Image (cartoon, one colour):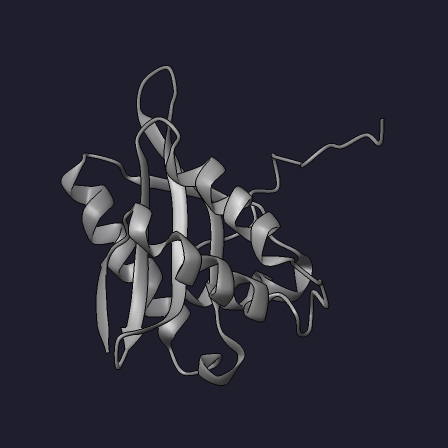
Length: 143
């Protein structure tokens, strides 16, 4: 398996993998490819964005995508997407994607990652050292 930083040419393959990944439990979401491409583009064209993807036999099987989030005394990295295609889930790909991403972030002097997750995935993230911050809550409003 190979890992590398993604680029604009990877967007179609990223969209296919994301759509496939979210089609199953626990999300059961139907992502149209053009909508997935739009989401990925919105992440990757942002200020100091970064993505790492996993490839098996030249097929993109998963990715971690996000952006630098500058704050008062340090930079954070917000992981917008982490996905792995169904046939490669529970094979360590997600954990390796996070590890590879951390290498790139440390090179940039970033020591904190943040993300939003559904509860069903908290156990996975805890195994990767990413834990629930009890002092922070995601708020939302339908408009």
